[in-house]
Length: 238
Image (cartoon, rainbow, N blue to C red):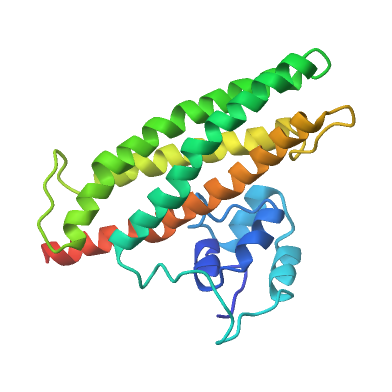
C-alpha cells in the first residue's frame, strides 16, 4: 500500500498493522479518529505531518511470509466479536479494579505532594464508570444483533437498524478517547515522578497499557466491526 498525507489513518493501520505502535508513540489517533486523513490526524495531534509520514515510510514493510496479526477483515463478525470479548472486555474487567486499588494506594502515599493525582482520580473513576456499562451494552444489545445477521437471520431488536446502537457506541468511544487524552496530559505522559514509589510506577505503567489496549479495542470496533456490520445489514435488506 502506498501512503500519503491524504490516506485515512484507519486504512493505513488496516493494511499495515505495524503502523499502530508508531502512530501511538507519536500521539496520532488511529482509533476514534481513523476516518481522518493522515494530515488531519497529525494536525489534531499537533504533530508535523511530513515528519510522521517520513517515520511511517522508514518502518520495515511487512513481507508475504512475515508473521502478522489476525486478518479481521476476512474473519467472520462472530469471530471478531468473540475475540473482542475474550481479549479486550476480559482485560478491562480485570485491569480496571487492579488500577483502582493501585490508585488508592498512590493517593494515600503521594496525594499531598502531587495534587495532580486528584484530577487523575476523577478522570479514572469517570473512565471506569463509562466503560463498564458500555461493555454490557455491547454484549447484551449490539453484539447479539450482529450475530443474528452474521448467521443469515433477520435480526430482531427494539431498534430498526444496527446504525442506532453503533452511533451510541461510537459516541461513547469518543468520550473515552477524550478522557484518555486528559489522563495522558495530567500524568505527563505516564511518567513516574522522581519521588514516586514502585506502586506509583506500577499504576502509571498500568494506565499506559490500558490506553494502548483501549486504542486497539476501539480501532477494531470503529474501523472494522461497525463498517462491516453496516454493509452486512445493507446486503441482507437488498
